[in-house]
Structure formats: C-alpha cells, structure tokens
Length: 387
Image (cartoon, rainbow, N blue to C red; front, side, top):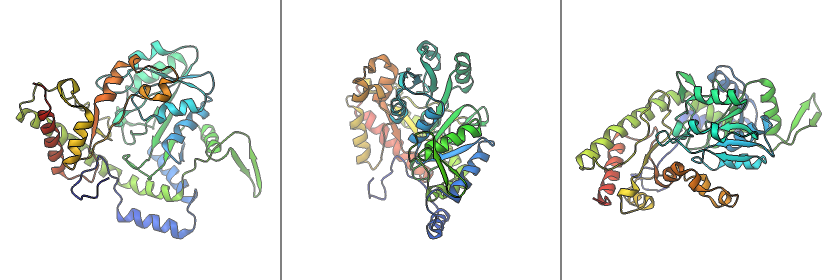
C-alpha cells in the first residue's frame, strides 16, 4: 500500500474510535482469546441470521474446511465448485481428501453456471460449493432445487456476501451450511476471521470440536477428544471488532451501493465522451437488490487493446489508483495442472480470469474518487485502443 495520501487503494477497512476503544477494553480485561465477546458476537450473528446456529472461526478458510468435515466429506468424494474464486475454495476440498470438480462460470454473473452443474454430477458427488463473487449470489432457488434432486449438501462460499440477499432474505438466514469471511477487505471485518451458519445445534457443536482440537469438556476437570480437530478459534479481540462493525453495517452497505451507482453512471459517461462506444468493457451485473457490492469488477476488452491487464494496472497505479485481480482461474495454477486439471476445460472462466480487474470500492471513498478512477481507466483504454 502506498504512503501517498492521495493514493486510492482498491480497498481499505473502516474502524471508528468506538471500535478502537472497545478493543482497548478487551485488552485491559485480560481475557483476549475466545471468551465472553466471542459468545456475544456469535449470539448477535445468530439473531442477524434469523436464529440459526452460528460459530466463528479464525478465518474464512477454516470455516469452509470445517463445513466439509461437518458434512462428512472426504476421500473418494467429489465437490462441485467454480474455478473463479480465491484458491482457498478448492484447496479446502483437497485438504479433506476430496476432489474438486470445476464447472464453468456464467459470462454475465461470473458465478458458477448452475445450468452446467447437472452434467458434472456423478455417483461420487457429495456437495456443491458455489461462490458468490463480489457479493452477488447465484440463483438460490435453482441451486437448492439441484441439491434436493440429487441429494447433495450445499456449502455456500459466501465469503464476500455478508449483507447480500436473495428475494429479500439475507444470505445465511436460510439454506444449508453457509460460510462467511471477516478478512480485512470484507464488508464486515474482524481483521481475520469467519463464521459458519448451521442447520442444527448438533452440527454447530461438532464444528466447535473441529475448531479446537476435537475437545469436549465436562465439569471442572473432565476432557475428552473423539474427533481430530485443529486450532481455528476466533479471539475476543477479533470478536469485539465484529460487534462494532455490525452496528455500522447498514451505513457501510448504503455507501457501497451509492458508490457502485456512481461507477455505472461515470464509467458510461466517460466512455461516451471519449468516443469509445465500440469498446467492449464489461461492467458487473447492475443488481442493487441482491448484491452487497463487495467489489466493483470490470472485464477488460483485451482483444481490443494493444496491452495486457498488468499494463493497465501499472498505469492506474502511476495515477495513484490501486487495483486488484479477483481471480485468475484456479485451474491455471501449477498445483491443479499437475493434478490433471486443464484451464481449457472452463473457457469462460479462463477468459474472465485473464481480463477481470477490481477497481477501488470501500465506504471511506470520496465521491470525487469515482470520477478520478473512471477518467483514469478510460484514458488508459483509449490510449491502448486498437482502432
């Protein structure tokens, strides 16, 4: 991150003084690991999700791995997922001994193409793990209809979708196992962390065991371990940040939506005034009912440019504008190629992974930042446009 105060990073978390004071209070209390604030945070999240059981974890990778363990998915099992995600999504499938099956994405939503899922189901398929890229959910009715028809578990990688909705219902307030991340760039952050929403207290209690070495305590001194667990608990320091962030979430969400509206208007205006109506710059789905606007991502028209994405990013950086790539197709990584996956098997994901660009979007941005970003981006595209 640049030290230049005029530099616009692609994201930046917001912490008010009340949050800083709350963290200091936890530090002074002497109880800084998992304790009363964690219990309060989990109870508050449960209320947010309509009373469903919730448990928090050290990060959003642990939430997904433990969801797989709770669903008893392991060696010999297949899990259908998307190649356009942070690699953690498929890494956790490998980590429990199961096999990721990658289904190509929809070119408009950039999420897994549910119309192609049925063809990927085999007798070994145990679950579907969709990802809600940039906070945009898949068609939840279609997703759960497929799962019900084929008797599959659904593990929702809703890492980016805290605050997103489907037909007026919060993502996480319904469905099967739903995983959220609270990493630093998320709409609600605990700096690092995540949570899982469960169907039953039984599943939540099993996840608690997996979270902390498989341990169960009885009475003052009794302990037992009956499953193999890890060390994935969330601390009270993290939890108190999450409690404060929840209070500010409606304000954050409204600001993100307002900035996204500005992006659509300003980018289109800039393209028109630059005479670039024929430039195929692909904007995200203009959805202001379901998406939480975690990110604003465009697809660069690389076939119309005489430069690559890295050059566009470099020139934006020179203008004091940070960008990101979320994400290259997982099937292009060496780990996955070495296991026989081919990026050519998911051609839409391959194209999106090569051309997607994340522009700055976070509540602390100023209105004029959008104009500066849009003007800078369109200027660079015009410079490199192959007429």
